Structures are given as structure tokens and as C-alpha cells.
Amino acid sequence: MTYVVNDKCIKCKYTDCVEVCPVDCFYEGENMLVIHPDECIDCGVCEPECPVDAIKPDTEPGVERWLDVNRKFADSWPNITAKKPAMEGAEEHKDETGKFEKYFSSEPGSGD
Image (cartoon, rainbow, N blue to C red; front, side, top):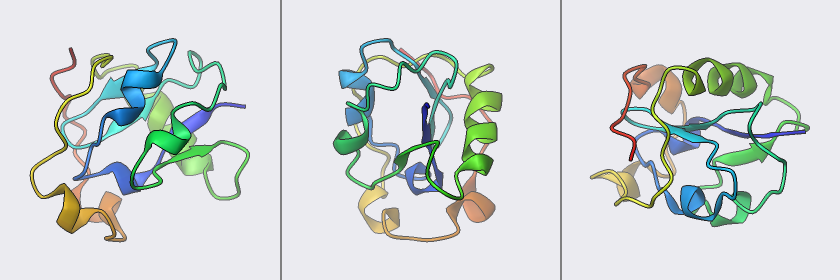
């Protein structure tokens, strides 16, 4: 099992989760985070830290798509290990649906 980040993270990018990760397996895109599934040790400490419930175990139904997205972009985005401020407008986007189709950016973030 591994954990994955889904589209609830897009346009929010709260980084509370990266601060508690013991293996630094988070990677930063321009407007979301992903978890490298081969680095995640399945400890689960990140899941309750996410204020928008964007982190899920890969055993949940419907997360297969997110496993692919996380794997693909973790290989090209920079590693992030320290907390940063959430994106501007995060509060207004946190409950929005369909964010991947509307806003996803494959551009990398700045990392640490």
C-alpha cells in the first residue's frame, strides 16, 4: 500500500503533510503536491494532516488514476520537505470539484 494525493490538493497546496513525512516522499508541482509511491513507507502520518482530505491510501476505490498521476509527476517535480504557505485563494478552492480538468498544471513547483 502507498498513499496518493488527489485533485482536492489542486489550487490549495497545503503543505502540512510534508512536514510530518519521515521519508520526504512529497514532490511539488506548480499547484499541487504528489507522493512518490515507491518512496512512501505507508505510515499514514500525512493523511490526517491534510485539511482538504486530499491524501488517500491506494486501497480505496477510484484512486488508481491518482496513483498514476502521483508516480508520473513525482519523477519530474522537485522534492519538498518543509512547510510553505498555502496557495493564494486556497480557502475559496478547497471544496471545489473537478479541479484536475479545470486547473491542473504539469509545471514543477519550486521545491525546497
